[in-house]
Length: 71
Image 1 (cartoon, helix red, strand yellow):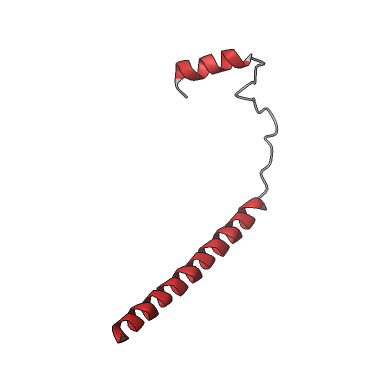
Image 2 (cartoon, one colour; image 1 turned 60 degrees about the vertical axis):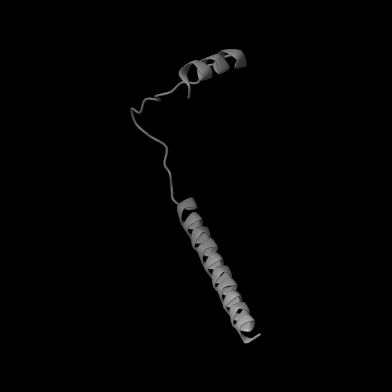
């Protein structure tokens, strides 16, 4: 009986430790997200050239290109 109580006590300790580590990880990720969200991402200025130009393709043609190139 005493061995079962010791095992149960160890399981409860492990669950509490897991929950605390999970909360710590969650709030650390949340703080990092908040920090990176506030970074200023300026648009290019001057003689910048747009590399990709979006074309108005039909959905069938776009799917054909997707399957052909395997992207």
